[in-house]
Image (tube, rainbow, N blue to C red; front, top):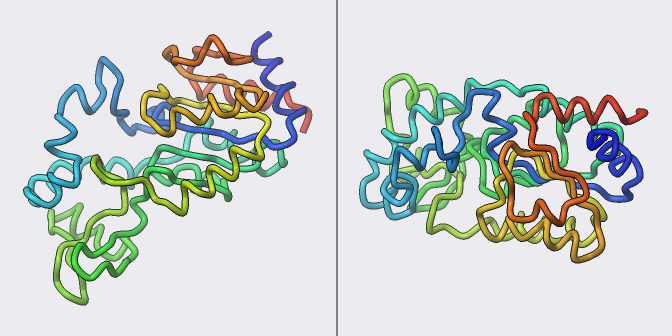
Length: 248
């Protein structure tokens, strides 16, 4: 019944958006950060390995920690949930994807209008001259040999364009997201615990504007009681089931 209601709400929405978190990518083999059983922050102090201070003060340690995670992300493939999102966009059911992930899996699955609120691994920026480069030209030597990427222009360290702790969110991307939220009458949250502000406030803004809210996540979130549909199910089964119910 909840699957059918989610499909009905999506089909009738004027401007629906998706907010995705780590839970959509864990079936693709990418670890999440905050789960109580095997989240990365259960094993590491994020401010010691994934903060701007860690990058600047102990660069070697940062890149040692980041290397296996980068390898997992680079090798990961989109799963059924990513492809379902892509189909929803292809048929105009949703207008955009706001993602907390840096894995590029939405784009690999075919999604076009993706806002990466926590940055991307596709590019790197020089910490000195601020020139931006495609990550692809440095990845092989970094992943295979552990060589820290350096700027071809000034030889200083390149920083991955993923947003670290202590960094501000990308201003231009955030402005686009705010515009999307203001236009939206439905949000579907997929695989996010909604624990990180300001992203966690976005669903509340939707319902404050009398919009509809669908949540698909294994664990409860703070706003479940206000949502129109809540599915505490695996995203790779729940989302394709919703898609199947929509008469495309």
